[in-house]
Length: 362
Ligand code: 5GP
Image (cartoon, rainbow, N blue to C red; front, side, top):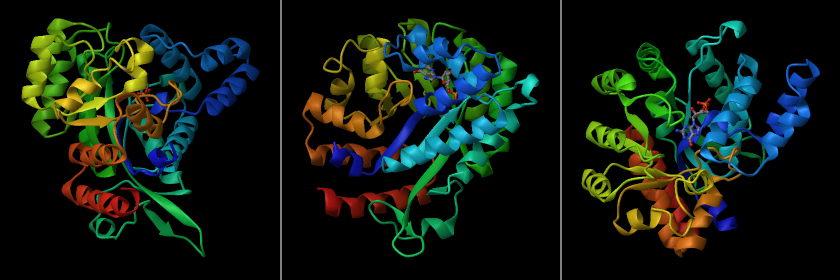
């Protein structure tokens, strides 16, 4: 386990509100209970409960959003989430979140995103690299990338990029707003678009115009695919051919074949898939098939708060379940650099990080 923590890692599939610490959720719940908005005991049980079926998860997200959706709290959770990933030696993080309008809180999608970015910048305990900057990417990074503070203290460096999620409950126009916001904020760390939300809600045709628009604008796209066995949608998603896919649990033989021939990189979320029933067990998870087929893969957490996991733990589970050796795990982590949405400069820096780490860890 310690080795998996020391391994530099790339996280490509993490939802902001699913990555919040339980302790923070409990603290926020207490504050709302004191104002009489919720009953703390009810919420506490829900937050600490272990069972997480897919429908339960989406009920939980509605609760999380009640707890977290004001500007200051969004800033706080963004700060904590980036600090937590950096503590795990995640050296590159694509964090995804659904920009939210909330009239009662004076919140627009833009102001929500500004609050997220404020949080990333406020993470003073770590060196967050949010923008592409040549001077930074020329820096020499060490295997646990750190920068010198005064004396012996060092800060961990983490490259962070943002993906804007379209929630499946949204209309075509709302989805288009999100894509336009991504374009507007591309110089502020926003790098791509995600389609997520309850997979039994909504129709592919509703989001397609916005996804098409993003494609025309050259904005990279990742799509949650096959969380449920919706044959028509899985087919349409594969035909759309986004830059990456999340989950890909419920594919049939023809769809597996197509996915493999398209070589679309897959964000693998082991714990999440087993907990929500997308995979029957760790042992029978489709990771093994894709890994043996040398399909492009990246291990991810999905919602490390909700599922009580960490990226280090996901690597550990792969070793424990599928018998991957340390060099194989290292290679898996290193290969994920190829699938990041950030530019070649960042890739180059990350390759250096892995090169240095390789001397120590393999
Ligand atoms: P947020 O976008 O509010 O920061 O993060 C929570 C949201 O991410 C949820 O409301 C949901 O739309 C999406 N999400 C988180 N985990 C999952 C998942 O496992 N599957 C799907 N389809 N969506 C998810």
